Amino acid sequence: MINQKRKHTNLIKTEAKRLGFLSCGISKAQFLEKEAPRLEKWLNKNRHGQMQYMENHFDKRLDPTKLVEDSKSVISLLLNYYPSEFQKDAAAPKISKYAYGTDYHFVIKDKLKSLLHFIQDEIGDVHGRAFVDSAPVLDKAWAAKSGLGWIGKNSNLLTQQVGSFYFIAELIIDLELEYDATTTNHCGTCTACIDACPTEAIVEPYVVDGSKCISYFTIELKENIPPDFRGKFDNWMFGCDVCQDVCPWNRFSKAHNEPLFNPHPELLSMKKKDWEEITHDVFKKVFKDSAVKRTKFSGLKRNINFLKE
Ligand code: B12
Ligand code: SF4
Ligand code: SF4
Image 1 (tube, rainbow, N blue to C red):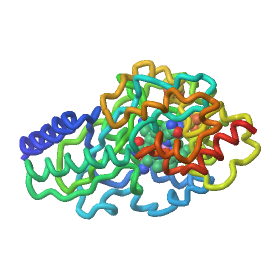
Image 2: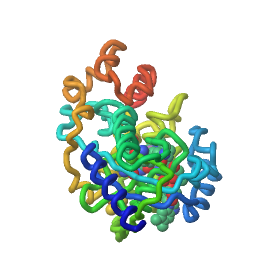
Image 3: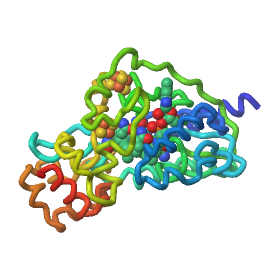
Image 4: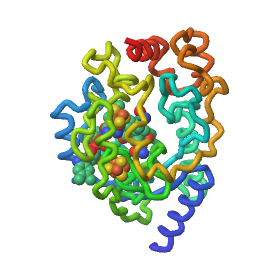
C-alpha cells in the first residue's frame, strides 16, 4: 500500500514537471486550523474591502473536504511567470508582470485538466476538481503546507530558489498520496517589502490590508479610486509588483518558458504617451486574451487618468 502511494505520488510529480509546472507538493485534505482565526480576523477588519467574494463560503475555504466530496489530497502546483523582457519606457505607467501575456486562468486550467486526465488514465477511477484562483481555496496556505515555499512578510509564497513570481493552482482529489513537509521561513529580520509598499498596505508582517493595496484599487475596485491615494501609486496602472521586486529572494527569479505568457509584441514598447492616448481598438489588440481585459478598457483608462491627476 505504501509503495503504491509512493508510486502514484512520483507519477503525478513527474507528469506535473513535464507539463511545465515549476514544482508540485501534496498535503492531506483537511481543515486549516491555523489559518481559520487569521482569515476570520482579516475579514472582520474588512481587509477585503469590496471583494465581497472573500466573505462567501467561509467553511469551504478552510476545509477542502467540504468543497470536494470525499477528497483526500490537495496537490499544489506553481507556474512561473517571471518574464525575460520588461516595459522599455521607464516613464510609462506600469503593468504587473503577471499580466503581460495570456490570462493565467486559461493557461493553467488546461494544464490542470491534462494532469487530472493523466491521473485518471494511469491510476484509475480518481475523482477531483481543478482550481486556479477560481474557488474558495487558500492557495498560498496549501502551497506552504506542501513545502513549496514559505509565506513571506508581504504575504506571498516565496522560495529561496526562484523567489515569488509564480501562480499557484491545485487539484483536489479523492486519492491518498504521500504528503510533503513544510519548509522553513527565510524572511529573517528583513522588512524590505513593508518599507517599500507605496500605500502602507502591509499593515503588519504577513498581513496585507487588501483594501489599501494598489492591486486592489487598479483591478478589483469597480468605483472611483479614493482621492487620498493620489500620488501614492508609484505609476502602477494594473497591479503592483513593488513588494516582490524589492524582495531579496527575487534576485533568483528565472525567466519562464511558457510561450503563452509572452506579451503582445507592442506592449513592452508602448511609451507613456501611447498609454495616455490608448484607444479601445489598441486595448483590444494588445490585451487580447489577457487578464487585463477583466478590468475593461474603462477600468484601465480610469487607472491611467488617476496617475495623471
Ligand atoms: C484576495 C486576493 C488578493 C487581494 C488581497 C491580497 C491578500 N494578501 O490576501 C489583492 C487584490 C490585494 C491581491 C493582490 C495581489 N495578488 Co492576489 N489573491 C487573492 C486571492 C484570490 C485570495 C487571497 C486570500 O485568501 N486572502 C485572504 C487572507 C486572509 O489571506 P492571506 O493574506 O493569504 O493571509 C494569510 C497570511 O496573512 C497568514 N498570516 C497571517 N498572520 C500571520 C502570522 C504569521 C506569523 C504567519 C507565518 C502567517 C500569517 O495567514 C493568512 C491565512 O493563510 C488569491 C487566490 C486564492 N484563491 O488564494 C490571490 C493570490 C494570493 N494573489 C496572487 C498575486 C500574484 C497577487 C499580486 C502579486 C498581483 C499583483 N502583482 O498585483 C498582489 C500581491 C499583493 C500582496 N502583497 O498580497 C497570487 C500569489 C502567488 C504567490 N506567489 O504567493 C495568488 C495565490 C493567486 C494565484 N492563484 O496565483 N490579491
Ligand atoms: S502589491 Fe504593492 S500596494 Fe500591494 S502590498 Fe505589495 S507593495 Fe503594497
Ligand atoms: S522582502 Fe524581506 S521580509 Fe519581505 S517577503 Fe521578502 S524576504 Fe520576507
